[in-house]
Image 1 (spheres, rainbow, N blue to C red):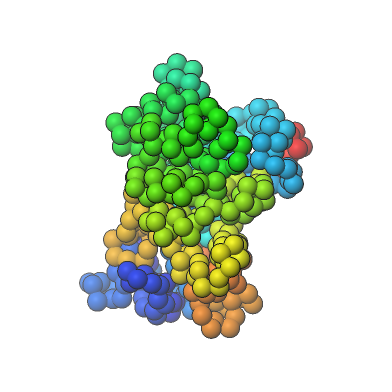
Image 2: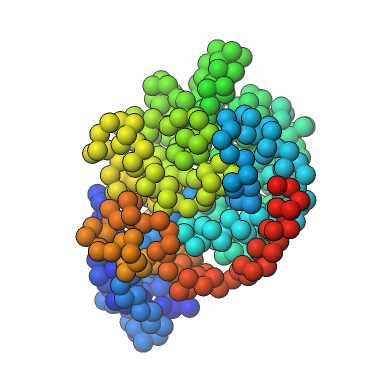
Length: 427
């Protein structure tokens, strides 16, 4: 399909900062064909889309989540991390039937689409169902089956084989797959070393929880006499294919190691704060050259997958922590939500930007909504005023998956029915 989007404002990045420009945008198939009509030979071939009073911007990218946990939101609150996991989350997951993961992931996709997320990095525990849901929702995703154990080729083999089988069956232009060892406390040194080798052999990203809690760090130090970051460095796990979630408990030396090895950090401010794990030292990370990306974590701990909400919390939380109003500007936060994840995923200039040749992963923001009006500073408004309800339409890979707030590919009534059934069983 070919679209000519007219009368809207485009959010562009000029290499230094964001700017808003009124210009026609041409979409041809999955990609952006042109900004402006100068390079278009026959504009009449393009279907007109009127975007009057709307901002067209790159879709947000959720850099760490467990989408299938969406139905658990508001059911396991006000608990510290390990009690939250052991007493509430793990018992529910142990009872879940395979089909439940499909519907639960679709529910998460509904929330992400409606609040402007077009791409996410997911760690799940059920082969096939989460990938099938992402595919059916029409979303772009990087997906990894959680791997635990002591030896990748014996007790970890089941998870590893499932991860590779899922990759072989579902990989596409929209869905790509990563290796997802859970953490240093759920995986042995040997298994983590093996995953690092497989990552290089197969050219796959690695996605891991890292230095999330005081207990994780103290247990690792008691066992290895080094921090989790130091352990992974010595194993050979850290490189530019590594995306480390959380990193709330890293030392100055850890930050240096993360920067030197090109690791991307997915920070999850709401989840980390809510579980009592504090805040990641992202200011020091950014100053050291660590690529910081924004994620929500699961809706069981956040309790939402809404990245617009997360952007606002991210900014004001770290202004408070650093006791300065000048850090974490709206521009810096937007970079963490769209540009940095694209780089971390190896898709720089392909997603997270509006430019010729990039994938048409776009969201249309209604500038007439009360939360954004008047439009004094649109970029500031995206960070400090928007709440996700302003998203009017969503395009992924050149196709509208939400148009005028109506989902085009998903049956929300059926999804909600199935979620009621699941909640009755487990919550």
